[in-house]
Length: 419
Image: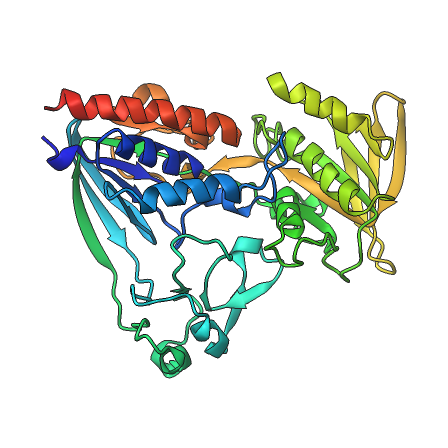
């Protein structure tokens, strides 16, 4: 039997956090393995949830507090599962821990970042700005402990951060190590990645400065984002008063993502409210194939649609071009309902890029099968291994939390069957 009836959760996003705290509070040890330096996943990068439009840090902070107050939850960051073997009640898991180069003496004082002379693209803000190689993702990051990115750090050839730290918290000799765990069950909560807009040549993704993705829009609107919540276009920091959203940017396209990514319509409707609240004279136009707002989200759709400065146009964007003189973006679109082609310019364009399961490019090692699109094939999972949230299909935050609670129960049942 697995010692202490441990349950392994792979992924420290909202699904993984929920599964972990629900499991631990029911009396089982929970171990979270997260590949990045911080917990929170994609939710930590959002400005607001739909449809209530409340900030995600509320929900994250509650879960972080539950973890801090519960000795039955252990977590490893900068960690990836290397091997899973065994059976329900007795899985052996090898976890590789990459060096953080910061130890538990860190107080989050920021001295290392101030001293660091090297900048790198800020991945948390999707490259909209830069950060130091010694960094903390955002002001409510958990754990609130700095990390040093080995890809950019000059190591002992620089070591200015070491000299600046008063707490001996920096260890540039830190090495990778492997931790072996024996667990009763495994929860795959690996989350998702935005579809690479660079693949969308026809929509200007990655090539036109003022064409951004929906997740970049979240960061622009976030108070802890690169512009402190002010929606400014990347090319010249101009306030955006005229914006277009392009739906299904890569989704429902056999050349990219053949499936609907579920959240994109609601995300664009939500982001339309960001602009309208910030700039009362702003205008928004959403180009869509179908607007999909399932269940209770229909009311939110009608609320946004009633805004006279928000226009929804059924039509597929055929061409995106840049006006090099102004930085504006010109769209050529087939207006299906009007039966004509329209050409219009916007100060900024947001591509509603789709949701790609993280397991598309990073498979969990073990006897696990995947669909052609990279989602975990649920019918193939062995007893005691469960997938939740976007690891198995595109879902929103609310559904991910619901599913994670259900999976926590199943994981506990696996542990009890192994007695």
